[in-house]
Length: 336
Figure 1 (cartoon, rainbow, N blue to C red):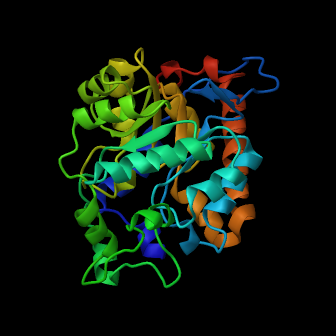
Figure 2: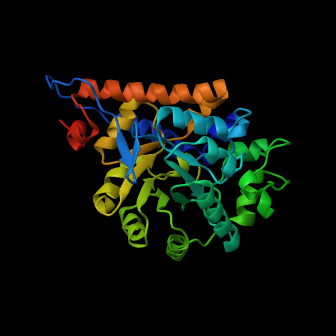
Figure 3: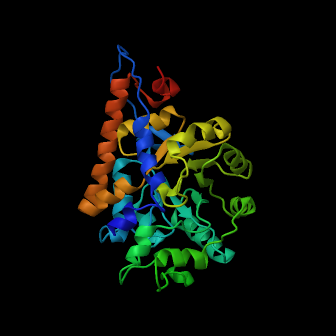
């Protein structure tokens, strides 16, 4: 389980660079700024959140604790922030969204069988999802050598619950990673902008495109209907030696920041990293692995603690940098 959550693709270069990239950025703080009480609140697609720190969509939370995604949804609710449920959750979306507060979004992959994809969208709408997050950087699964070595599979009693009613709830048996086999068997490998166009026309919900690496792709995604973009390399789990997200973010913001909201994930471990992301133009950050570690340690209270720690660190970084509100933060903070 630890290797599944922790590991990345091949030599895990991008996995490491995601974190070290934020560490290399320095905060050129202002003094005598007269900062009093800080305001960390923001909005995502017009919905209020208490802080620009959201829970990223990650799979299989019941590997971490018995309550799985229910615990994560409650932690995000307690933190007053955005919760994004993975399509590959161990708990059905209807049960999870019943525990989640607004804003709550549903992450989606495009399946080879378009009717399966459409049924997931319809169920998400009916269950109370307020946006669809389309992951576009996984037409296939990057080689994750830890998973191959460990022959990763779900323990007995766990399944891909959102897909179970559609006959796609079990990972196939065999050599190597059963998740890799599942992706080969089910995900649409030739996903293109036509699929984004189809999805935007198939739902009343706003569509967020997750997995953007280039400014030109960001502009095209916005032109095809995306209301927001997530700069992401899938946590270093897909294409190894892809650039760290902190390197890509300013280019995507410069290209498409006037067209839609921009978020970022990957390697964010401290509240100061969040402040750096805001300075580079992100509207919010998505947190994946740290929430999973919180679940592993103490279930719902553990995930709640992780979000509380990041909020406190963000508030502290704002104070020490001379920023009262997020609108005070821009690229001046990262340059002398």
